[in-house]
Amino acid sequence: SMGAWRAPTVALMPDFVAPRDRSKGNGIVNFLGGFGAIFAFVVGGLLITDDNPFPGFLLVSIVMLLALVILFLGVKEPDTRNWDFSAESEDDKISIITSIKQVAREPDKSTLFMLMAIFCWFLAYQGLEALWTVYSGEFFGLDRGAATFSLTFVALPFMLFAVPAGLIAKKITRRWTIICGLVIGTIAFLVLEFIKGDMAPVYVLFPVFGIAWALININSIAMIWQMAPSAKHIGTYTGLYYFFSFLAAIVGPTVLGFFMDYVVGRENMFVICVAFFLLAIFFMTKVKRGEPELTDEEREARQAAINRVDRE
Image 1 (cartoon, rainbow, N blue to C red):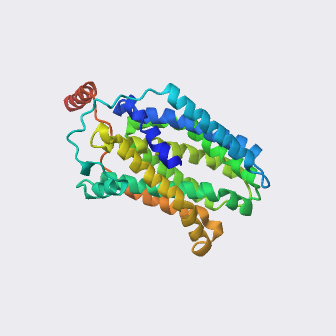
Image 2: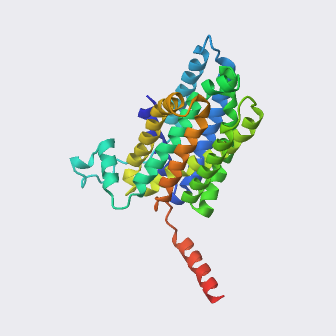
Image 3: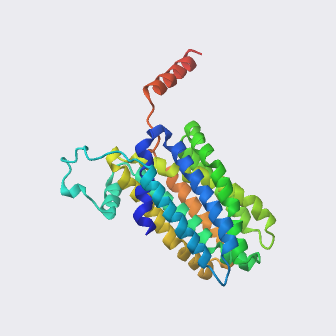
């Protein structure tokens, strides 16, 4: 059911925010999402037991109903009834698979490479998140509640760094911000690979990864929005983003579990995460679009700076 409402909900944000500010806007969205994740991890860790997980599901149901009420009463989306869709034929009303085929046929493969990078890093993250309770129970002796609570050490730094991640992207570009996050995350995974039994280093490295995840996640969907051919296609491109991220969430636990059981061993989960983050870095080096267009004022300021350098 999440697939039916999450993409349209997220696609509302760029309707209200200028392209150059969408990383910051997405940072605010994810700041609130991170707050919700912390609430879920903390309260869920207290409510959920091995014998009775029902209170956790009840809490989620209540919160989702509250979100539905707020969405309908508080959000006034743009009126698209006056938009001119007459030029669009029936062939333009395409499915997600057709959208992927069209992206793959583009001369500039930036969108395709971006989607592949998104798939790789979400596969690692979602697989890790799903299997952490099993892994931490086997190699750190944590019960299910403690393992769930420990993920707060990722969610809290992610929440706190969500807005700064968008600001950093304005300084060094979204692409390089994401690559920096992937490099930091890869290093954190490499160190975590060699830690067993003692949670103290994990409580240091999880926040580092949370910051890295903010650098990655805050700016990726903003790049996808920027790659959309027009404002009318933002919803479609948001759907592409969530198709690849949700697909990664579905197959991630299975892929990591397969490699853990049959290839690298159960104790080497973080090696698999490193491999997929390295793949994501490779794909990101192939991305050439996704940055916001400069305003006239910003172009003039940049040209003035170039002229000053030339005179010096």
